[in-house]
Image (cartoon, rainbow, N blue to C red; front, side, top):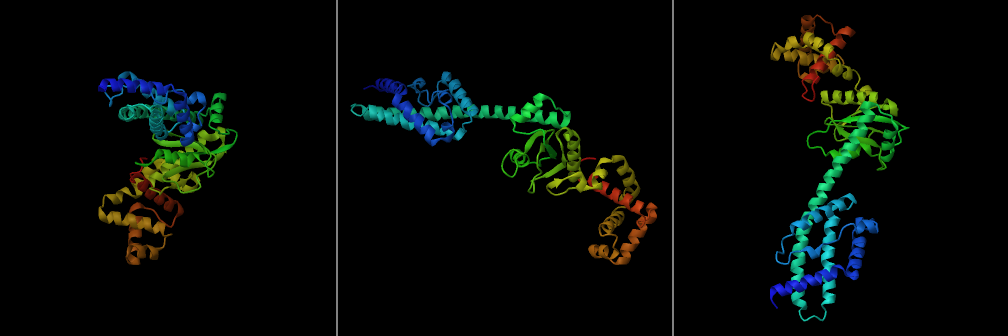
Length: 386
């Protein structure tokens, strides 16, 4: 028989199988049994799209999905994505359909003299068509996933902004919160984290908004490069980055709490602190150092800047004073740390006091010097600008 004639017979065979109740029932049963996502679909959802549109396959060009079929396969992938079917399971459904098509064909051609030729023709045609259809359907699935992710992100960001920035307490916002499973009548911690380059945002978001029991702990979204949100309980383990955390406050007080969380995050970053959770209370006076720029500049210009102009000698004096304060004003510990004689440490401290007109034995001067040194450290850390 001419190849064109064999192709025509094969086409008729495919079309007859597609409307065969046995084929449809077997395929649906296997998909629901072997692919969990399909098992969760209702009958209406399952049949929202045909499993395979074999009848549209061009008999002469087996590696090509006809242009008019492309849109339908793109739409099929989008539908499955919106139904919550993972791309992997969707693609596996084509493999099952390919197997069931050949299985039904073997049954129908049991006594046909052209059985082997038709099965070979069917196999070559179906595998080529499945390969092409899977590629197009995967593209549709991916495009729908990106669209849903963008909409989800936009919705999350809108709700989080209304809570933390606008102080919204409208009934529509409360409805949004309830749709996320959040009880707005309870108290929350405001959080703010600045992801480092390469940080997996999805993992960090889940870390923040999921509790130890795996349930939703709050709501977090990306706003102005930072992950911002509110959670019912603070992280119980060490986070992968610096996180600013407020105290626990009633829902309507979250805007003010969010300012505190942002201040804590910026302070921790300014002082190059390791990954962890920080509050304004835990950071103490450092939070004031980073917040009061004017005071910091004045003190830095008085106690640090003059020594910077003296090169290495001036830098050595500033470093000695810094270590002296860190060592609780112990000359011996500072000398041991710097591998210097105690008299050298004493000389440098005295020189610093003479040039600046201060006394590190006077509390007010000691605090002012410490403030200037901390401001300089935060200012030049490179982590943030003051």
